[in-house]
Image (cartoon, rainbow, N blue to C red):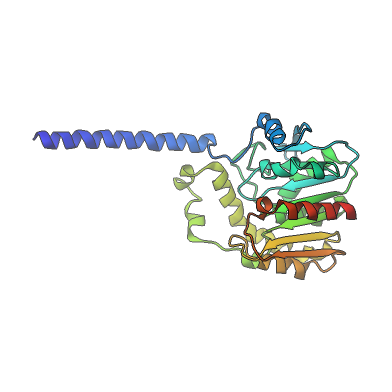
Length: 300
């Protein structure tokens, strides 16, 4: 009898403890833990640790729908050309922290990195924006604030790639050049694993970080968005640099071939297919990225 009572007490304790853990996990997920973002107050010190003595500037700019788009910029003079850096999915502005810390780049250009809708410190964190038209318009909101009447160079990694491509399609007069890094742009190469739909509705959506759920939501919508863009690729008439790793297992290198086929009116298309590396060349091949940006800036 005592043994049974002890077992019942243990099960009650374990059930209660498990309930507390689940509740704590739910609260943490909904509060934005694992948000993959760097608070503004941490940027200056992180940049100094990497050798950048310039002070970053922060802004929150309302887009056409009234949503505040958060951005971090750095530069020595407003007269320098502007380079706009757009992160993938999930992610945030701090994906490009090493670029803002690069003193060789900040001597040549102003750099601004943006929290895309649904991510970072842009308003309504965790609420994704599946429309690439709206995503490109959000980028334009920042461009119009920092570089009105100027043509800008845009860099996009992964899902940031189709965002900047859409920007070039919708706002050609404001686009000086594109750098597509491991970009997800070919609708035929978009995969839809079973778990993509499984984690979309409650209760599973409550159990994963908001940034990952927002990422899953926009990735689910990406194929249809890319199909809408198919007739518009011929309208891109600015220099384009494509950087992709042969062994990218998240975004197949076939996306680079798609760019080569579709950019029929691009006046200067540079293809750089890396024999080694993976999807994360944005971070692992900084020198390659720096050279691509320098080359694009010299063409501007």
